[in-house]
Image (cartoon, rainbow, N blue to C red; front, top):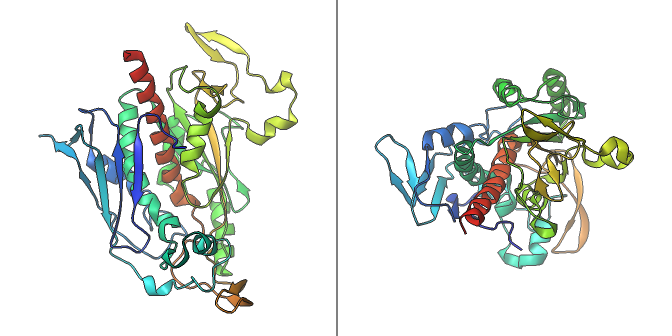
Length: 364
């Protein structure tokens, strides 16, 4: 099952192939976006922007195709799909020969079982976090198209290395607050110095840490989504899980709502300035898979980077014996800071699809 109703998104290439990219079909003709703004958004995902990122440096210059050039430097969609191509200029495939001795918690073994000798032989291949670069590029386009419709998406780190920063579950987070933390060394609303120290101590020992990002979509109208498989939670989750290292997605109060009584968990409806709202937002802006007019709030859990320099147990598939492995190469001590932009991108693409589907239904 594809997660989209209107859009078609394909991401191609591998971590250490000559280039990676994406193809996005289904956008209405005549939609304009600024490629320089996409580049600024994509820079948040690049290595070196935040603490603890991989030493691998890529320029990630994105070249768009399938668009018409406007006099002001912006690009406009046509009836053709748009493409985004990114060159891989700093590749070292020889550092990643793990097909015979698969790395624990990587996709090495599973992809070998599925694809045999065709499995990725360099880095994480198509399972690598590198593949979020074209996802973020297309998400940058989606964010601009949503903003023209009054919808804004913002994400930040809510927890890193076990240090819990401020969350929307503690107090409402405005778009401006979420944007304000992006200039810090770690994009957290609070306690980023403490989180950085705990992550640093783990990295010094050759280990890695995970964390939680939160994402909020502001300005969504009520009525987007549907029931069952058409629910907006289903669509958002499907796209978010395309980000490597994601192990959990929650909406609103998430799993904490299971411990509440109905009288505590329910969000009472109220009228404010002629609009139907809810007095609180434990449902995360969604009822029955459909937006209710409140901000859509979600939490995304990321596992610790599985590539660590400590000795780990694995197997030798050639001899079917147990052995030990030390993973080499260039890796993030944590993927969470760079993943913030990837979460925003995934959410923006899923929401744009829901918006375009609603617009199409209204026209018919």
